[in-house]
Image 1: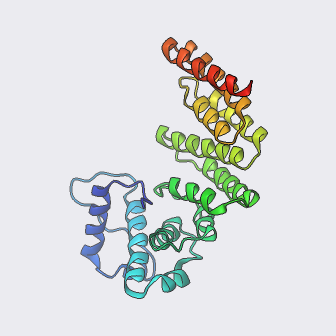
Image 2 (image 1 turned 45 degrees about the horizontal axis):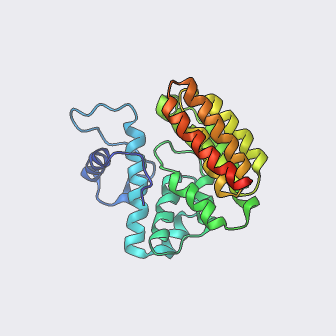
Image 3 (image 1 turned 30 degrees about the vertical axis):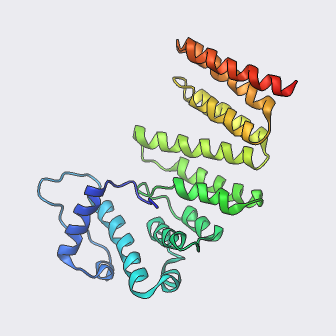
Length: 249
């Protein structure tokens, strides 16, 4: 289960630099974390955060390996650091012991730009089952915090967009069709050069049995495709739209 955006070679570089100082991962936090020197030739502006991110994950992993999941939960379940709780959650998931509450704890931590949140958002919906209000409450709180985070680059804006798309889908799944429709409209307007949001909206409403809304979003997607000069794709979407309309008749 992937829990970090860091590339494997960067994780390896950070791990090597940290272990050159001490093989005991807990020792890196006694009393406070201090980043080791970066390897020669590696220029990275957020090296300190990268090494702390890796060290926190490795410290939890060491406890899990040496003392088991129960001890890991006792020591780190209330951690404010998302990577520590995410490491616990991934371990619990690997032995089919992951709970909704543990996923919610990951999403309640302060945002860590290096944590890969996508699997936790998916698991939030899966483990939440029919308790849609609880799922939406956690999802909305995370989405607000994630959107307020100021990473600033284009990649981060794409991640924020993906989280908001996911919330729109969660609304539809929870039966809050108007809320989902409104958020999809916002997202469609934010991405004027693409049809992806309209297609996501159509699929979400179709999966929820809201065929009329799915048809509406296919037309929105076709209109956008026409505007972008993608006539063949627009015709394909209108063919799908016609097939769905026949289901309504």
